[in-house]
Length: 295
Image (cartoon, rainbow, N blue to C red):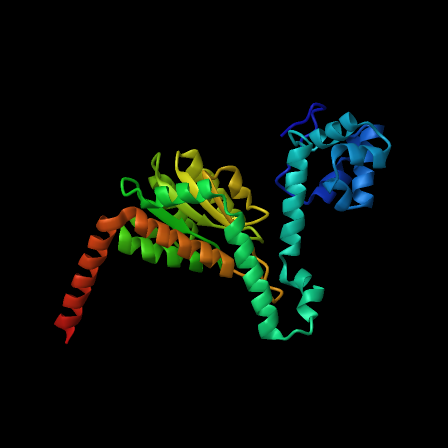
């Protein structure tokens, strides 16, 4: 991207703090005040409103907007969205989590797990938009379009689990691995209306994000499973289902996300009704014959 001064700016590389430092020489005096204020109070100052940041930097709110525009952002909200993702990706690092006070609480491992998981599950389900969830069920139960599923290093287990259930209930379901060639082939095969269930939790996987973007560009509908701070793939997703990732350890939990998947399976089962039951019965009958032939 090239800003109004002809300076090339790439908002997809480097941290915002690096981008701000690198841009100091080309900013106006007022814009430099904004950049220096953010850097001096990073990242807190950048999470304030434009008016609050302007007051802190002793400039006008339009100067704040011009400053972030020089970095290639369409406005202050987009800048803050990028900053929030950056902060939460950093907080998602297990090393950053080791110092959390709640991990050192003296209530015992089981009691702490009960407290954290029950809270995360309740928050995930209660905060889930009913309309988004209902639309996800409709897409995954639509047998006129194929469904492909993929995830990252850890979240792939959720793709496998959901895919295993969908395969029993409906045809044209495929769980993809994370190998680049398999994903490239899937992109090449994508047709308008295809459905992709994509799992991407912090720290977000750039390859998974790019994959979601490319299939969306080809007309696919992406159902994104992510955390509350949203994978960048949310920008191209038709539906976003977020889950709490708090855990009683330095590592993010997939327990609430699994609850979302389980609830989706129940919804798709209800939606397919008799056709789903007949497919399960046919698969079970074939399985029983296979077992009998081997004995």
